[in-house]
Each structure stands twice: as C-alpha cells, then as structure tokens.
Length: 128
Image 1 (cartoon, rainbow, N blue to C red):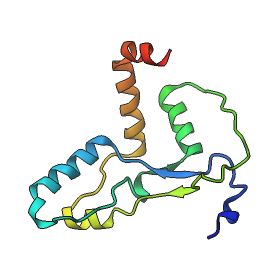
Image 2: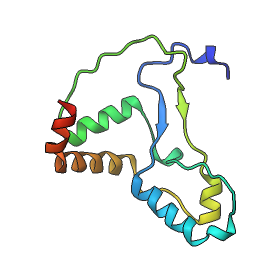
Image 3: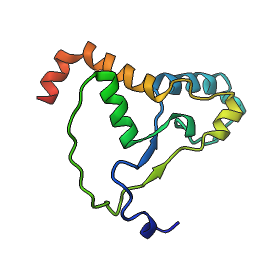
Image 4: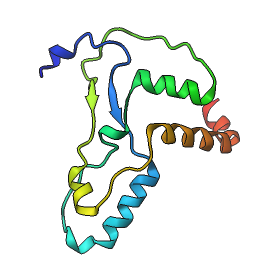
C-alpha cells in the first residue's frame, strides 16, 4: 500500500506492538541456552499481533488503570515519517525457541505505573 493511502489516517489509529522487558528476558535466557544452535541468526522480536494496540486504545487503557483523564490535543496532519501500523513478525523466534510474549498490553501499562510510583522521587528530579 502506498504512503498516500495512509495520509489522513484517523488520529490515534496508529498501531504498535509492545514487548514487556520480562518477556524479552525470557527469550534471551532461551537463546543463551541454545546459543550454539543458531550461530549468526537474526530474529525479529516484539509483541506481535497479540500484544499490539492503537494510540487511542492505549490512552483509554492508561486512563482506566490510573483512574485519571487527560485531555490530549491532536494534530490532524499526519507526519510523512509516521508509520501507521507496525507489528513485529516473531514467528521465527517463536518457532526456534518455543517462545511467545506472555504479558498483555494491560500488564505492560500496570507494570509501568508500579515502576513509576516506586521511583517517583528520582523521576521528579529528571522530569521537573
């Protein structure tokens, strides 16, 4: 599909997949245990279709988890470098290492909220 088709994509409909660090860690452990079986091979890794979300869906989930509504302004002009849809094809890594991401988009958001709350003081120095 040409880029011209994506001009005017509804705001917030861009989709990305997410990969929780714990899921990446479990894959790396599996890879290390089989390091001699796949010399020099390169694998795409991400959340795939199961752990993907649009910006609108992610915003709604963040509001639900936090119990907080934030007004978000949008720029209806699509950037020429914006990719409307990116979902990783992890099928080769799944096949070679009997691996798949286990954590959902909700797990991802909830864990980020916990991490931010646990690190609020040091983050204030950086973000304010």
